[in-house]
Image (tube, chains in turn red, green):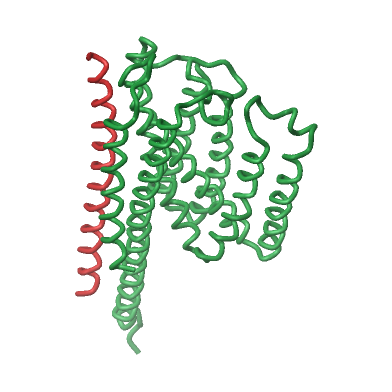
Length: 42
Length: 301
């Protein structure tokens, strides 16, 4: 039963890492789109 | 293409959910380790995906370096073709077969060697010019994410099975950590260096880093390690039901990695577009300033 904790920890950590990376991609996308918009205005 | 992305995303999510169901419910429990062995369905596919991405990074980097001169571009094509042909022939020669570790099939070696020219020409065809460099940075970054998962899930699995989080000196573990560090340094170089030679330097570092991949892969074939010996194609045995789930899980992670790479590739293109825009803006600004300052610099007649 104790080992199950490790199984779920491994699965949760995997998806947390993927979620963090996807979040960073979304943030970078929105920042670049904003910069592109500002460049267009100028 | 833009319509394809949401469709593929839904399909990938469904495949990942199915793989999770197979891993947690359908796959049989291991007689020795119990349920904790199910970490294999995330740990191993992540490692294979990371290796594939680093391989793509290696091919893209070699091609980027080779394309610097037309003569080296032609020479590289012939060298890669020769590696493919000679590698396939060599893997079936008895003296070479004797060098292979027990359980490794020559056909597996031949297929791996054939992947070098196959990937080289496919990448060259679909990623011309600067897109090679974009592909290199994309595959390295996503590869680092998958390699991070390998390095995190490994100790989580090791703790209940080995009784320790990390086995210092274990060649598989150490070489994987070194591989991760090399690619992190590759990304740091790309992020913080503004030299005109950054892309070339990064490509050279990527070629060096890729040399660690075979060491990581073959370490458990050639050395006795704390890490288990290979159970797939290495003389070990795996329940066919477990193998089936493992392969489905890998397919799901490959689809996911493809989508993440697609997004990262578009992000890099957008980043370069913005950088170009800033460069044009500063050029235009400089020209206006020069024009504006011209009368001031003229001495009165």
